[in-house]
Amino acid sequence: MEKTYIFGHKNPDTDSITSSLVMENLERKSGNTEAKAYRLGKINKETGYVLKQLNVQAPEMLEEIPEKAKVILVDHNSFAQSIQGIENTEILKVIDHHAISNFETKAPLFYIAEPVGCTATILYELYEMNRIEIEPIIAGLMLSAIISDTLLFKSPTCTPKDKEVAEKLAKIAKIDIQSYGMEMLKAGTDLSDYTAEELINIDSKETEANGIKMQIAQVNTASIEDVLKEKANIEKAIKDFMDKNGIELFVFAITDIINSNSQIITLGRTDIVEKAFNVKLQDNMAFLPGVVSRKKQLIPPIKENA
Amino acid sequence: MEKTYIFGHKNPDTDSITSSLVMENLERKSGNTEAKAYRLGKINKETGYVLKQLNVQAPEMLEEIPEKAKVILVDHNSFAQSIQGIENTEILKVIDHHAISNFETKAPLFYIAEPVGCTATILYELYEMNRIEIEPIIAGLMLSAIISDTLLFKSPTCTPKDKEVAEKLAKIAKIDIQSYGMEMLKAGTDLSDYTAEELINIDSKETEANGIKMQIAQVNTASIEDVLKEKANIEKAIKDFMDKNGIELFVFAITDIINSNSQIITLGRTDIVEKAFNVKLQDNMAFLPGVVSRKKQLIPPIKENA
Image 1: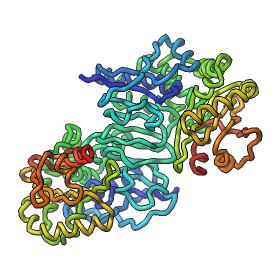
Image 2: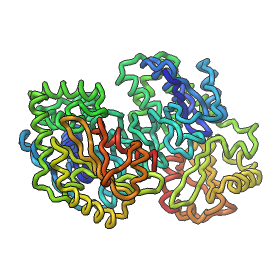
Image 3: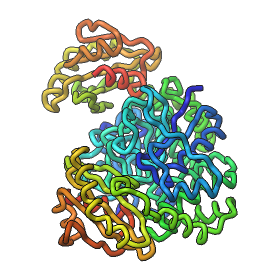
Image 4: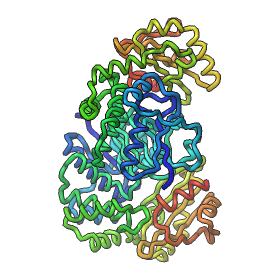
C-alpha cells in the first residue's frame, strides 16, 4: 500500500491540525494503514492547549510533497492555501467546509463538502456512515475543532448540526464543553510573545477575486486595545508581506471573542474594504461590530466588491 | 420557499436526465417542495427509451437561468458544461462523479463527489443516509443511469459499488438488468435519423488543458462501419463546430458497445491525440482497441499530452 499524506491548510488552525489527525484515524480504521497526518505550519497556542490537554502528539511538519504523492486534503481545497506542488499530486479525497476555488483535478475523486461550521462535523458523519466507533481522544479532537471554528457556537458560521455533533462528542470524550471551551479559546488569545510578523501569520489566508490577490488574516483576542499597541509594527509587517508576496490588499482582523466584534487594519486596495463594509477608514482601520467570521462576514463582501 | 433549479450537463445523457428527476424527488421528500428538475438539451434515444418504459415525463427544457437563482448541479461541475450564466447563480449542492475543473463558488456549499461510475450510485447513498425510501420508479431511473454510464458494467469506470447498488435497485424496480439493459443500450445505438451535425452533438463535452480548448464527443453503436458511412459529413460538421466555437482539438469517438472498442475521428491539434494514444492517424482516424470510456480512457491521456 502506498503512503497517503493527510493535511489541512497553511497557517494551520485547530480544525486543520485535529482534522488531519482524525482523518488519519478514520483512514487507518478503514484499512488504509499507510495514512499519515501532517501539518503545513507552526502549531498555534490554542491548538497547543488542545494537544496538551488530550495528550496527543502534533503531526509532523511537511516541508515538501513528492510528485504524484497520494494526498487527502482536510479543511481546505484552494491550492493557494495548500502546500507548494499540490497540483502535481494525486488528490484522493477532500473533506472540507469552504467555498470551492482554485481547485482542479485530472481524475474523479472523493470530495465531500458541507456548509457547516467545521470540518470535524463532516468527519463525525463519515464515522457514522462507515459505522466506525469514535474513541474518546478522537472525540476530544473533533470537539475542540468545533469549539474553535464556531467560537463556542457564537460565530454565524455555526449550524445546528455543529452544535448537535459537538454535544454528542462531548459525551464520548467526557468533556464539559463550556469550561473546556473557554480555557481553550483563552489559550488562543495569548498573543503576548508573538512578533508583529508572527501575528499577521497566525491565521492568514490568501484569496483572489477579479484578478486581485488578497490576504485576509485574523487573530482572536480578549482585548483589541492590547493588540493595537503594536499597530505601527503590524503595519510594517503587513507592508513587507505584501511586497514580498505581490499582495494587493491585506486585511488584518483583530477579533474580540468576548464581545463578538472585530477591528481591522487594512493596507493596499482599501477602496474595496470601504465599499465592502460601507465604512470610511481612519488610520487604516475600521471597527466592524458583530463581525467574527472571516469566512462568512469578511471574505464574501470583500470578494464581491473586488 | 424559493425555487431550486436542478439539472445535469449540456448534451444530456441518461444519467444527467434521470439524476435530475431523482434529485427532485429526494429534495421534495427532504422538505424542499420548490425543487424542480430541468434539462439543458434534447433527450437522446436511449433516455427516451428509459422514460417511455418507466412512464415518466422528461424534465422541462431550461433555456436560461435567472441571476442569483438557487441551483443544484447533478452529473457535472464544470461551468463549461453547464448553462450559460451559471457563475451568477447560487449553487447550493453538487452531486457528481467527475474530476473537478472550472468550478468555483463564493460561498460554502454541499458538494459530494465519489470516483464511481454513475451519479445515481451516489444518489442511492444519499437516500440511505437520509433514510428515505426509494419508490420503484425512482429505482428504475437510477438503475437506468448506472446501466447507461457503465455500459452494463463493462466500462472501466464501473466500480463494485455501482454494480452492488444496481442490483439493489433492480430488486426495488422489479427489472431484469440484463434484458432491460440490452434493450436500453440498443435503443441508444439507433443513429439512423441523426444528421452529421446532430451526431457530433449527442454526447459532446468541452474541456480544456494547457490553455487548449477541446471538444470530446462520443456515440455508442453496434456497428462502427455504419457510422463511418457518414464520415465526410461528420468531418464537415466537426470543422464548422470548431470554427464557430473556437475549438482547437475535436475528438469524435464512435464506440462499439458490443465489442468494446472505439474508432475516433479527430481534427485540429491531432498531434496531441497521436501522442496520447501512441498512434499514427490515417485519414484523420485511429482505432482504439478496448477504449469505451471517455472519462477514464479518452480525456485523461489527451489532457496530459495537451
